[in-house]
Image (cartoon, rainbow, N blue to C red):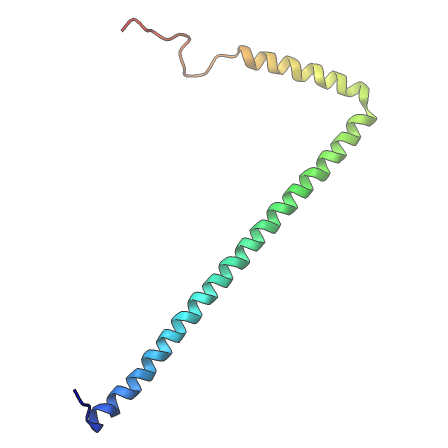
Length: 102
């Protein structure tokens, strides 16, 4: 199959257009990948900051507890009584027993 000069006048510009389109698609996929990586980095940094902040608040909580040891004993007793009450509380919609008499 041989191409005539008239056919080449149409075929060559279309080849360039197709090449440009594929290049644009490749660049777009690379851009999408870079944006996804940047977003992942931002999420990781947010999580790290959250962990650091919680660790710092835990440190301040521990220093407050060590300075007020008398109060912490009262808090411990209150927490223990609340836990006992929670253990004895019945579930709001579950029954008290299971009927196995099928």
